[in-house]
Length: 284
Ligand SMILES: C[S@@+](CC[C@H](N)C(=O)[O-])C[C@H]1O[C@@H](n2cnc3c(N)ncnc32)[C@H](O)[C@@H]1O
Image (cartoon, rainbow, N blue to C red; front, side):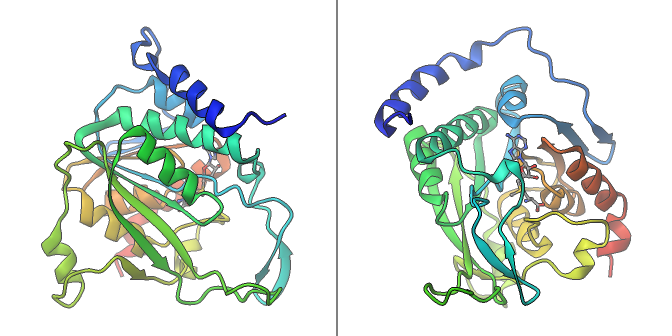
């Protein structure tokens, strides 16, 4: 039986206390490393994040499981298909999902530099849990960005509005953090007007899928904006749910360094192929 949420939270806070004291825990050899500043690890983020040195990342971008692969239907290329992104995206129940979110968010917070910040994406399936977990952990919420998907698939049931946004929570490590925000760069990218918290960006183009397919690939335009807004050249960026490596590509393209983690070697291999073609794919 599922434990009530309040007891899960108390239990989790106790379990998380003292995690920093782990000694003698050694990170496995990276799955891939390139001297340009690209490092990939394969495995469970919950375990690997806890093995990493604290306070080393300037920026973390996380596109975690949204827990929506539960037998529902969606529309793809005009056809009705089942929503099944993979085992990693299946819900374990509200309390368990929340406990998972608390654990990996807490592990990420430990890895951020004092002035570091973090971006976390989600839809209604998960964003409330993520936001509540970040508040519980003492992150300082800076913005909630709406990513408007411009050309979303239609809603087949005709019983809901067409889902056309995702939310990205941007938060500093804690209340005292002096986070990086490249205000001028954002303004210049927006016809010299202040950039708003509503970002209209199309889903990834075909040219972004030349090297294989990931079911939840984010557009390069979205990640470029995140990287340019909240980090500086030479900064170290982490994505604990690497997927097809979009965060890494945006980081490398803009002179940042990158560490990505994913449980799937298939997705890590796709990331490597994308990385190895980065200059030719995006130089146009
Ligand atoms: C939503 S996708 C990220 C997509 C990515 N933003 C992109 O642009 O391709 C989440 C990824 O997290 C990975 N994943 C899920 N749970 C994980 C875990 N506990 N540890 C490591 N990777 C995990 C999945 O294999 C999947 O590739």
